Image (cartoon, rainbow, N blue to C red; front, side, top):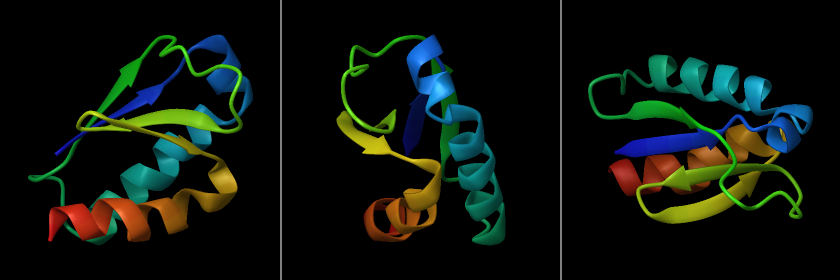
Length: 81
């Protein structure tokens, strides 16, 4: 699975660095390093929406640092299993 996180200026201000750290921690905690690739991308065109733009395979989500754990459990873990 490939997860791309926007690191453009708008998403950076919305906490993309924190979202990346949280996802890295959860991937390691669940021992999924061999199944998930994290990538960064500049502007993904979702600047007007709340949260950081996160693309999982071809689906886009808006993730705030406060709900990154929930996003991981509800989206990532369900897709990986």
